[in-house]
Image (cartoon, rainbow, N blue to C red; front, side, top):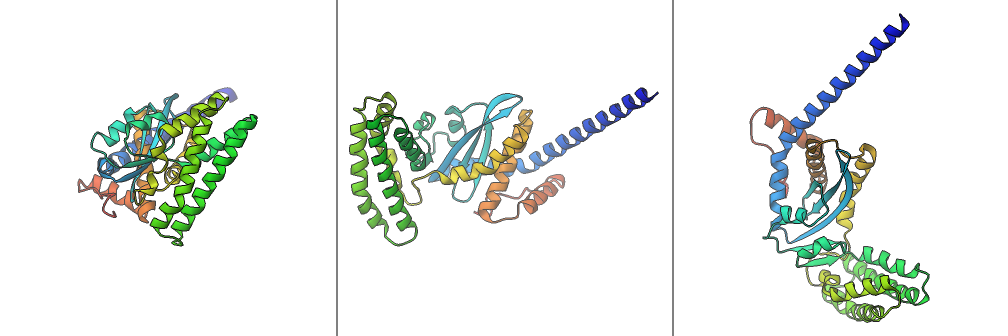
Length: 292
């Protein structure tokens, strides 16, 4: 008799969990439907932007590998979960009409965008790897490249704090630029294959190191992209990704709404509430771009 009661209790508990899960999924789908027009409106604006910070991180969908992308504009952000890290995701969101600057890491998928700013924070880590390689010549080169990077950040900090003008920034960066490029040329002769390859890639695309000097609003790091991913990475670690394509649509839509509201100093909960109420009443959905 005890065993039968235990089985019945287990069956009831399982049914309650199943019903709760179905209700949660239903609510998620309703919220996605309510917010999706605002999401698509924001995504459609990406090709018109003069500057974007773009980053991506690995996630999971249906126990398979996927990638969570972030596209950060000045006053809004768009997230996307896609099954690939390849450049096709860039084509979907930027199309052929984007002519702005993208700040990013050195991943080759970004090279299809003609105007890039490579992140100097990433480069500093590359130079630290040269120092840690154990090769004396590589260490020597890495130390000098890292020192030049620190000079770059000091000049940029002075500019950001309004201690120097933009013209002064460009003038101060002249010697830093010459020093870096001379060191990269020297590194191309290194006996370390990794160092040689890194220096060759950086030198051959050296115009992507200095874009921030000639385009107002472009910074030398991709901090904006990395900051926007921070909460998404915490979510991924807690949830282990999504179990379906519809779950991914919910996540990318909610992350887009939350981060954009943060940028615009809007109340995210109030925005979601207004969007759901408008959707259920068959009224126009609030725009994420109305605060831009």
